[in-house]
Amino acid sequence: MIDWLIKDALIVDGTGTPAFRGDLAIEREKIIAGGQVQDRDARHRIEAQGKVLCPGFVDMHSHSDVLFLNGSPLDHKILQGVTTELIGQDGTSLAPLTDSSLPHMVEMIEPLAGHLEGKWQPWDLSSSLQALGERKPRLNVATLVGHCNLRLAVMGHRMEAASPIELRQMGEWLTTALRQGAVGLSLGLIYPPSSYANTEELISLGRVVKDHDAIIVVHMRNEQEKLFEALEEMITVGRESGCKIHISHLKCLGKTQWGKMDQVLGMFDRAIEKGIDISFDQYPYEAACTSLSVLLPGWAVAGGWNDFDRRLKDAETRQRILSALRSSIESRGGPAAISLVSLETPENQALAGKNLEEISSGRGLPLEDSALEILEKERTKAVAIYHSISEGDVECAMRHILHTVGSDGILGAFPHPRAYGTFPRIIHHFCRRRKLFSLEEAIRRMTAAPARRLGLEKRGQIVSGFYADLLLFDPERFKDLATYENPKQPASGLDWMLVNGEPVLSEGRIQETGVGKVLRRE
View 1 (cartoon, rainbow, N blue to C red):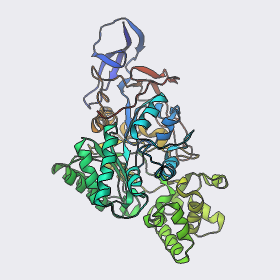
View 2 (cartoon, rainbow, N blue to C red; view 1 turned 135 degrees about the vertical axis):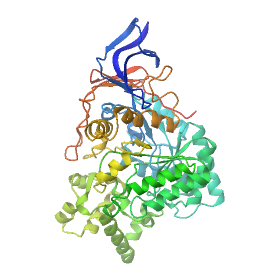
View 3 (tube, rainbow, N blue to C red; view 1 turned 30 degrees about the vertical axis):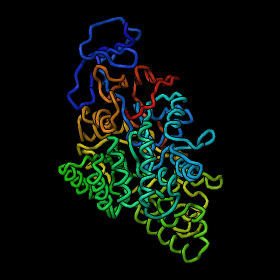
View 4 (cartoon, rainbow, N blue to C red; view 1 turned 135 degrees about the horizontal axis):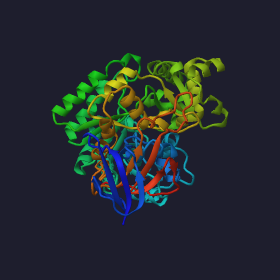
């Protein structure tokens, strides 16, 4: 007797090939037969009635690190059809943490990933993965190792180039993390101290990544006026190190950059022609979301936030910081385009959902002074939405064959709708309504393509011997409901989700079960 028999589904297998009507048999964790499966005894049977049966979605850019550690239910991801999450993004990961780096890393991780329900502790990557597994996650999870973690462990918060000895030490930390199961290295090149690294440092770490057949996942140094230079830097890293490069949340940020996506994609095409192994992901929205602190120049926080506080006491330096803030606000779309998502201090909670123009007007202060006042109180804890991407550029990138999907979802009091709607939005809006690609191609980009890119063994396809991470849904009903005005609306229309052969969603109802796995790079 087998465990599951799914009858008469429209099978979209994840490879991009045409869908076909058929059945699927599952025993324990894996698919054992597909196509026209003869009736056989099964403990559980689903009559699909022609609904779409496809692999579960792989989120290429998740900030669920602390949610997994807290044992959170992750309902907002389950209802989107996500069965595997890639954490450790933007240069920050749960490990390694040392006694000296821990306070700095926690200050960076928690604003994007949430508060830990417990005490942070120094640990290596193996210990962090063990802790994740002990929380019995509902979804599969894989992690990158953060560049900020490596730099802080070796160099602290110094804004300077690494010495040869320090490069070797960072390489040793990276080697250990990759051997312990990290699927790659993440760079956050707009976030200090990752932003303090020069290209030579990135190439040096890239060679370590290449030696382990892993991948570099990068938030580039610039997505605005120096977008082309930033992408060229990563192409150089790929060429000189030989490692695989994956660009996170590809975008042309700010009105002065709108309409340039076609040129950006041309750079990808030429890099591929030259043998550079490069790819990208994208979220399907016209707004970004990250810490308000990205408005600050990197030098302002060199040495850490205590040094930032000292700099503000010097009138001339404070004025330089205010000038840089004013320039950053304008380059990201202006004050009306920047809305606060979440804040830490009790006195600032009422600001969530308001934009900088409204806040500045209410306080009777210049824009940059209002922003600095918030940053002095919140530091990295203030998170904002930036309405600064064009719909045309979003669709242009989405048409490219290298395109994969990452939610980059950050929770908070008034979050970006991508946290709740990314994956069904690809199918409902861009596949069915905008008709940018077929259903088969949409699903390939969210299943087999990311699984192969990350080296996730036997994931992302419907084929005998692969893990039964599966979704069943009616494509007419599966849709995103979250909006900027009402962002905490879960997606609707997903009927079934199986993770490793066990139901996490049954007839639209979330099941109280933890069957996900911590996926380590082999």
